[in-house]
Image (tube, rainbow, N blue to C red; front, side):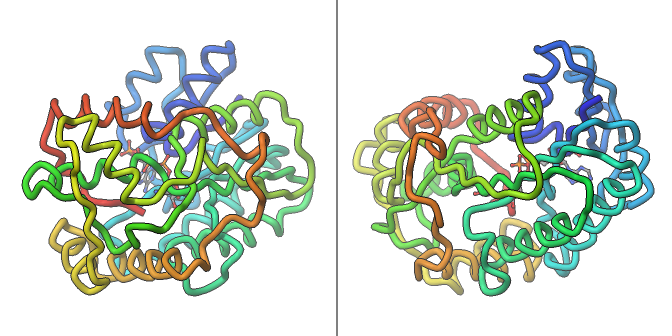
Length: 303
Ligand SMILES: NC(=O)c1ccc[n+]([C@@H]2O[C@H](COP(=O)([O-])OP(=O)(O)OC[C@H]3O[C@@H](n4cnc5c(N)ncnc54)[C@H](OP(=O)(O)O)[C@@H]3O)[C@@H](O)[C@H]2O)c1
């Protein structure tokens, strides 16, 4: 039995689908039966519960040979670090009690920074909590900036004909499609070819700047020359609160942007075949364009 957290989300859904396609038993965790239904149709067992409740997490993890872990975003958390720690502790305690031998944990590039990198520093502390587990083999996938983050700019692009954030326009960073993370996670869960505690960076197909990425998106949606604008941190925070985020989540994301701009959030590994994944930004932009044509985009940027 494989357990997948965040099973209706970007990475979890594809992890669950990949395992099911290989004929594996999957228990998919989410907060509503309704959203889990498509996975149930493919043969998954639905487990409805919140990962903030330690008892629910333990029930959900019982009998698992391996678990795919992630800390789901909570954009309205009053104290985002406390929220991450709560979920991390619930996971660690359930893994210990249910004696789960294999864990693949979604973390982030920059999770070597205990402080000063917003939600990414929270993931550092979650990694540390999980590393205290004895008898569990665990790999932390330190993924790069998600290409899917651009979907939070849909409205801005549609209404103001610009893309923008607090990130520097010419800062070249690794960007990854979430499906590529899911493929690596699923392969690791299937092969179980990892032991002890390790980290593995996933850096996408290549590094890109926000300006380059915005140009590719502009071309794909028929807005050639779409400009990228760097917003001041305070303005970006205000906009995030305006989209429905708590002050603390907005502050935390702003801290992360600053840490990226200052080069503190950066890969520790050199780019190699092992940390490079296939999906290009141009391929991602095709899917983005399809979503852009379908809807206006109302989701707020998440952490
Ligand atoms: N964005 C980036 O650039 C980036 C980079 C590196 C790492 N990361 C990390 O990636 C992780 C997010 O991964 P993802 O994008 O695959 O996730 P996601 O798409 O945001 O999905 C998370 C899923 O978790 C479920 N969920 C939310 N709150 C829950 C709760 N309290 N209890 C149980 N389930 C809950 C939701 O499903 P239901 O609504 O169905 O419950 C949601 O579909 C975060 O930890 C983030 O820090 C992000």
